[in-house]
Length: 169
Picture 1: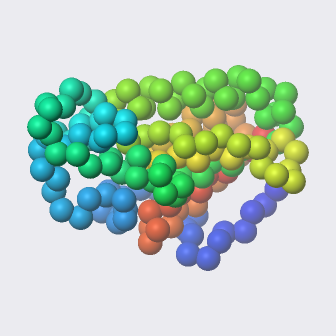
Picture 2: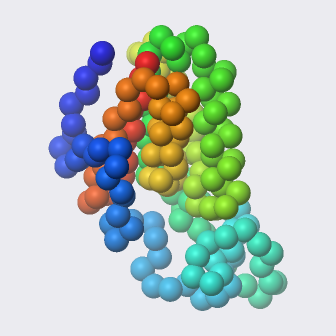
Picture 3: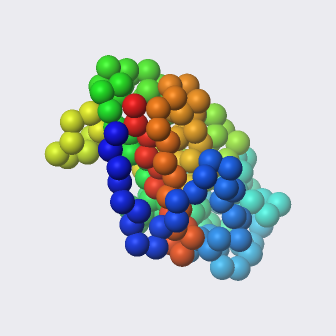
């Protein structure tokens, strides 16, 4: 079993600890956006107080949504590290589960997106999934744990609105 040290400023969380909505996210608008506001990159629409999928009128205010802003800045909110021999053997099924989970979440929540899935340099049998949303990162970890068991570790840094998830088997 691999043990990772908790990085400075990070808190270990139990599976039951909710991530608090009042935790500050620098990518969320500081003031209420005019309605409707359309993201020129992905087409998400800010309407009735939240980002959703829909058709924007031609005169809609234009502003990047928080997910596109994070992607442009290459600044993930969630990091999901997958490790272990099980990953090597079942990587296709695991990646399919991750992509399906993201598609399901993104259909209802435009700000929940996978930014990248990459092999971790210098480590055999390890992948890093980066996300635009901490809840998506947590959901991916929990989906992997539910489907394949293994070890799941969550580390949350409220000051940076950042979640690190580690799943191994």
